Amino acid sequence: MALTEEYLGDELHPIDIVETLAEHHDWDFDRLGEDQIAMAVEGQWRTYSITLAWSAYDETLRMICSFEMDPPDAALPELYAGLNLANDQCWAGAFSYWVEPKLMVYRYGLVLTGGQVASPEQIDTVIATAVAASERYYPAFQLISWAGKPAHEAIKIAIAKAYGRA
Image (cartoon, rainbow, N blue to C red; front, side, top):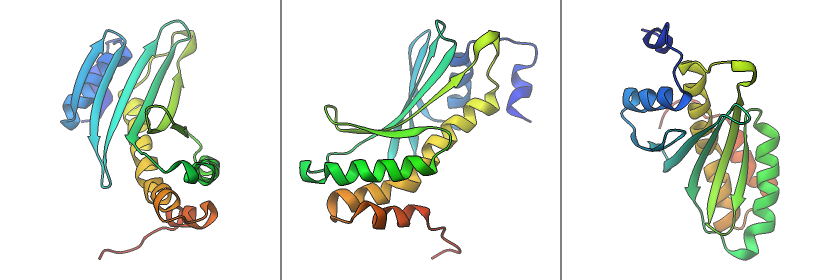
């Protein structure tokens, strides 16, 4: 059954849809309020903290996918260069490094102006895209931060496609 079929005829709050998706995927989640939910999604490299918040003011569903990262201060300029290279490849969202809380963040905003309603498939795709991008670029960010690799070399790891299985 398609995810949308569960919602036919209902105009649900976007966070209600996210909560149902979290239950469907068996993700740990916490409804922080009427307009916000936080969840943990297990990836290959890490468990990602994902927060979605609805802003009725500008009719936008904002998603933040984050993971802890504490690179040495000396690696930050090269890490920022790596973020720029990664963001050149990301069409639906962008990475940012938040120094104070030591978090790598992938952000996306789904604009639903004019009374549009997000479908469960759209929201599921937003979350899946964030996790996929984080999984894809995590090794490159680690190589830059801890192995001292130049951004243009490390990013090749993320861009290369793997074939087969080990």
